[in-house]
Length: 125
Image 1 (cartoon, rainbow, N blue to C red):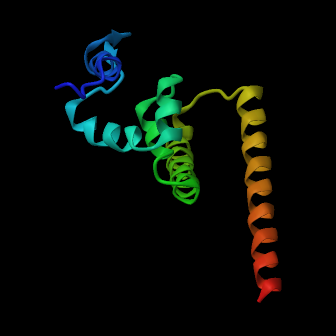
Image 2 (image 1 turned 180 degrees about the vertical axis):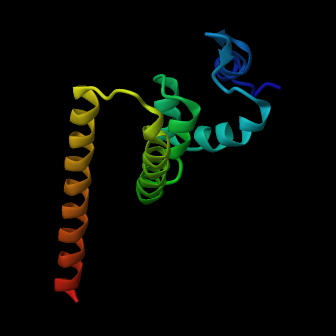
């Protein structure tokens, strides 16, 4: 018990028990496994301490490639949901169109970056 870090214990109990907007930082007890990985990663722990959600901080535990792939998969799922529900929307705004144009530009930039990186790798072979 002499090795107990009281500051860390206080921080942990606040994440588990203190509620903000009706929720704790951890949410359900099953999320403790995610918290364990976050605590083992300096960058993920810093992000969580700085206010990022458990989900977002957890992404940082997997390394850049895994964060990239999970983010792309999640973006696809959200866009698929938008596609599935758009016929139920009565009216679209200019902001909707602008956001979709921003998404398309971002997608192009990501694809160009990946293609350029692949070409660099192929050139090195």
